Amino acid sequence: MEEQVELINNRIKENSSRVVIQTLRSDQQLLEQLLEEIEKPTRSPSGRRKLANAEVS
Image 1: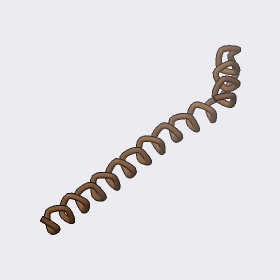
Image 2: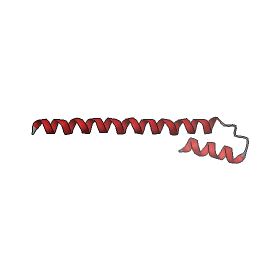
Image 3: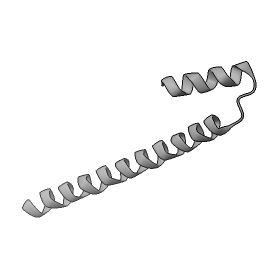
Image 4: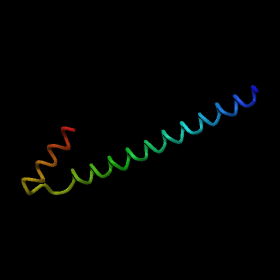
């Protein structure tokens, strides 16, 4: 019984770690996309609005 509890706890820890890693990768991709968006030339008024909105959120 104790071994089963330990196995279950280990699985929970592994799954939690995977979720954290996936979340961090997803966040990194979103941040990279945002950075690309910010670095684009902002000649048009809509481009400036996008930049302003990106900085606010």
